[in-house]
Length: 140
Image (cartoon, rainbow, N blue to C red; front, side, top):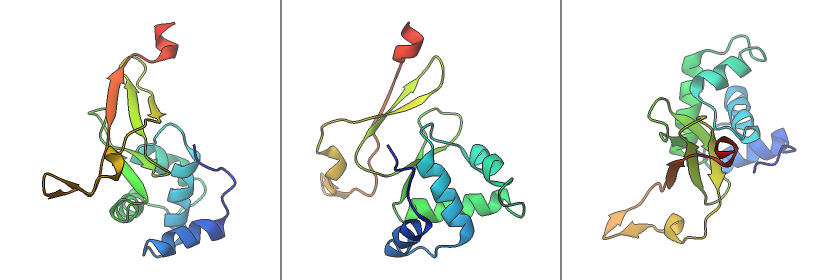
């Protein structure tokens, strides 16, 4: 889903346009999330980036994720009831969790629900559609 060839300048512009200071750590966290298809957790993000950034702390990762989530650049997914996973918001999509293998898939669905800003007078700030079941790989 994500474009693996995104440049640092494009990442920097994305953050600036959303009102986020483009620190090296935030750029690294965002790039990592954009390049993953498996919706990484905080631990996975930290473990993969600490080799590249030896001074990185888990607190810095949490703070970067908080800023990116608050500005609508990434989503925090609570689909598996165990840990929060992170996903780059690159268009309206749902998520499917395989209850057998634990993999989370992005699912494109045709729905205008993602674009809704008001529901019964309530202000919508985030929409997540999640499905659970057995994936094609596990069914075989």
